[in-house]
Length: 422
Image (cartoon, rainbow, N blue to C red):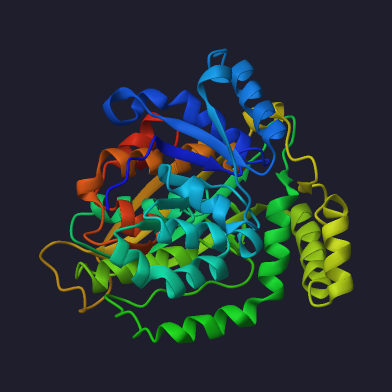
């Protein structure tokens, strides 16, 4: 049933805070589409807002022609028929409607039913894993790729682990990553949509555990020495600052990728630990205080309402209802350092201590609204241009499972998310 699809890409939720930057990135890279010409459109609930976003992109990129060239579709997550009409017209839908636990599933469902690939930028493990549980088989039947977490969560970490493994001579058995993010002189902050996702995510951590039981996975084999878990707060010699375990979705995504590579492609799995630098002592007091408040309030609905109402207050200005300014974005950046250990080509991974190390770096621009659109759009362009290198069947996949055999790392390198061996 091959239906003609007028658009390679439709950006759904294009007028949301992140969506507007995805629109700009698609417009910027349209020449990288199939045969040098990407056909794309924007979609969302409100035509006027969508027109404004296209107009804004036209101004920001000095491309006035966008105003007449970019089609606008009206679709709403609460109206399945409108989603079906949208999905039938696209090869890939870029889903930018967070928090995904509330708005993500109808898009995935419609994509699967209408034979459309779907890419999202969710950092919510519960949503991502639930989609895999509920839609993987159906997506496989339809030859549809549903690929979540294609933003800063979790392309740098997931592809960073694969890149490190590919650069290592021998068998890589474990990796620790250390993330540091820096804001420029203007400071930085994150839009409160992400804050809301964190609130609901922590409130529901028990549900995630029961969801994972339903997969009935066998434990992943441990190859080589077992990775040591570090404390809740420790001084990292690598970073020369204090670090804590990373609370985001990267560990969940990386583990799913390693499971796929091991079970489907019989590759040796890599153990993974993720940490984030929190700076010096003064930051630690802030962090501990904010953390205690957060964990206490998140357990009660009145507490969650307070957290949602006053993001700036409870996060020391780190999250805001307005989101960062463009100036703040220009000054911000991130660095992931990966420290890998393994066994050289001639040696047996299950005998003795690892005898070889590797250090790699993935660095890039401001994570939330510069790196995320770049990663998402490169994921889509890779899917369009390198369909032969994707997994053999459709399904609900991680970025690493989807793109391990593609040139996505080279593409990201050209766009400012840079992978290198240190």
